[in-house]
Image (cartoon, rainbow, N blue to C red; front, side):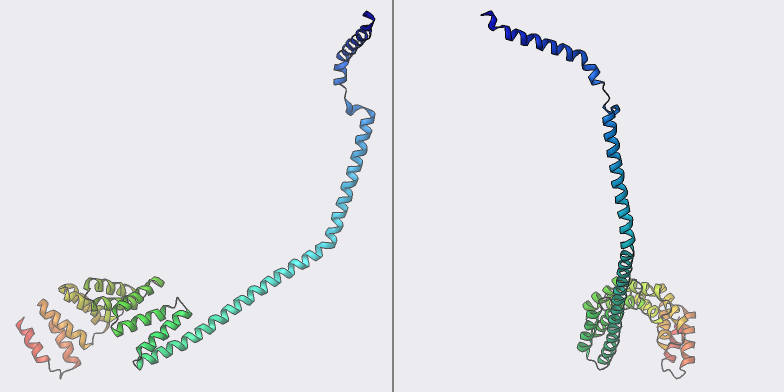
Length: 288
């Protein structure tokens, strides 16, 4: 039976011998530098040559394509820029034309509204102003005139809302503050009226009527000193205004200021010597 084991024994011995040889030679095999083998060197050189040739061909094609397509791209780019500029120019021209047409229509509508107001067709004038606003939602003049129309009609609520909207569009409008002061005065809101007149005067200190109106408000609030101060400002602008001089005389009498009363009396006498109130005024001065 032992001879049956002989083949297995021989195989085992051969395996041991092979393992011994591989183990002993493995470091040498591991340290083998394939890059330094002649065959590998030749292979790499060929690959490098082929790669360089392909790169040169690609670069040649790029240069050739650039030469051909560069003028085309340049032409297309210039055409697109010109086309874009023409589009912008056309848009601007259309916008200007539209604005011009709207402006012309608005001017005509404003004249129509003025004619309607002169004929006391207030409802028609209101519709025209609203039409203008529909064409130009930021037309300060239309809103302003509409607010004044409401004030003229005694529609104080509508007037106040419209005029306040004007101030949202522009903060610097002396007339609007003056109109708002009138609205407040109509509603008995004297402190608010005083504030609005003051704002109006800050923006325009050459409007005598505003000083006069503010003086009346101050007088109603029993602020006679401030009232006289504002009345003097009104008279600086319009020194020969009979209404202002008469108001100044009355304030002087209330304040017991004989000198100011006498000045107002003399000014009124120079303007209108036949004024029937002069005698009565002289008597009041004498009582001071």
